[in-house]
Amino acid sequence: MKFFQIINKLLCSNCKKKTLKENNEEIICEKCKQKYGSILIPSFIEKTYTSSFGFQWNRFNKTQLDSYNKLSLTKDRFFRTTRWKQNLIGNLILEVGSGSGRFTEILAQTKGSIVTLDSSTAIRANFSNNSSYQNVKFIRADINNMPFDFQFDKVLCLGVLQHTNDVKNTLKNLKKFLKPGGEMVFDVYKKNWHTYFQWKYLLRPLLKKVKKEILLKVINYLSNFFYYPSLLIFKIFGKIYKRIFPVIYYHEIIKEKKLSIEFSVLDSFDMYSPEFDNPLSINELDHMLHELGFKIIFLDYGDNGIIGKVSC
Image 1 (cartoon, one colour):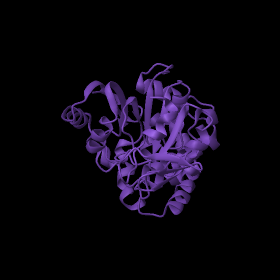
Image 2 (cartoon, rainbow, N blue to C red):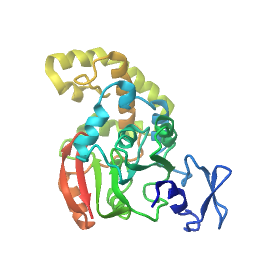
Image 3 (cartoon, rainbow, N blue to C red):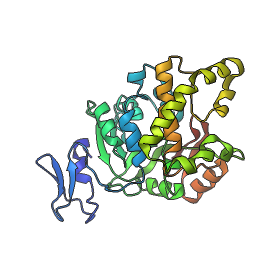
C-alpha cells in the first residue's frame, strides 16, 4: 500500500465503507455524505473522555520535545523501551495516543511510514510540531474505534493504556491492527501493594473533578512553591523527595529551574486530571496478554511502569 493512499483506505465511521474522498481539502464520505474535517487532520470522533489531554498538550505543546528542551529524554526512552532499530524504512507504523508528538518526532526520524493518532485535540499540537515530516499522517480518532481496514508492521502505544476505561479491551482492539509477525510496544502504570498510598491516588478522586483551568493554576503555584524545598531534600537525601511532595520534579535529570518547573506543572497536571488511571501488576498484564493470544517478546519494568513488546 502506498503511503499517500492511506486516506482512501480509511473507513467511514457512519456507513463503515471505504468511500472517503477529498473535496476542497476536506474529507467527505461519498456514500453517506458524512464529513471528517481537513485532509491534514481527519477527525473521526466528536465526544471524548480525553479532553484533559487536549487541554494540557495544547498548553505544553513543546515541553517534552527533545528538539525544544535540548535533552534526549524522549529519544533515549523510545529506543530503550522499543529496542527497535534507528532505521525503520519500509515499516508502516501506527502510533496511538501521540499527545503533542514527543515520540512522533523520534519515529519520523526513523524514516518509517507513520500514522499518528490521538482522540483529543492534542493531535493539533502534534501536527504543529511534526507536520514538516513528509512521512507522517495525522488522524483524530478513538483508540477503540479506529477507521482502518488494514494492518501495521509496528504499533506504538506509550503513556496511553492506563488512561483507557478498559485496558484489556483496548489491547484486544489494538491486536486487530497488527500484522501477523508484527510488533506492538506499550507501557502501563505498575500496581503494587503501596500504589494507592501515593499522592496521585489519594488526591485524584477530588482533583480530577476540578475545572482544568483552576487545577492548572493550583499546580503551577505548588510547583513553584515546593521547588527549592524539594531541591534541598534531593541534595541531602536523594530520590526520597519524590514521595514527599504532591507535585513531580526531575531534579536528578533537569537542572535548569524554568524547565524543571515547566516539566513539574505538566506532569503533575497529567497525574491528577485524566478521567481514568488504571495501573496493573505485571502478573495481571501477563495473564491478560496470554488470554488475548499475544506472543510475549518481553515484559519488564521500565521508565513509566511496565513495558512490553508483543506480536501475534
